[in-house]
Image 1 (cartoon, rainbow, N blue to C red):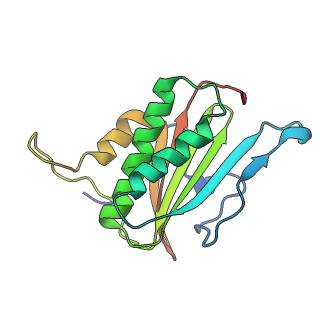
Image 2 (image 1 turned 90 degrees about the vertical axis):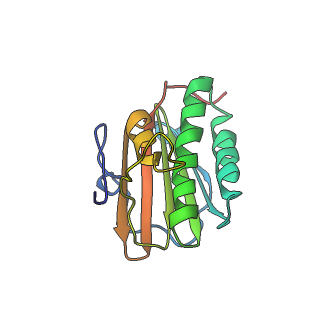
Length: 170
């Protein structure tokens, strides 16, 4: 089966205002958008991850730190951590360095994107009950509100959107 892109709940990231076709190559500052403008606050976190298995727990810690200031149910945090783990694992196993993690938290939505410099898009693998891997895209199908993968000049990025209960900073 070929590359996949599922967008049941929302379009791919480049369909949204302020998105480009390419993944940034330098780390923008973290911070918030909105506040005094009357628009809902959006928090961003962008970090380069090591091209090593330890990137997976580092990504989960980064996500948990971003979500800590929100009053989200533990179930939503756990699902977001699992989905981020799937994206980062894919980049470490099948991608090329560097690996970048972008986290965006908006009222009612967690968006995560992982990029690397390989242009090879993920594809569904034949799995059996005894298979050790090959279920990551099934996990995204089951748990993400929307997700996708895109090849760009500088590599590829995989992303997901996870609807979460609307909560304001603690």
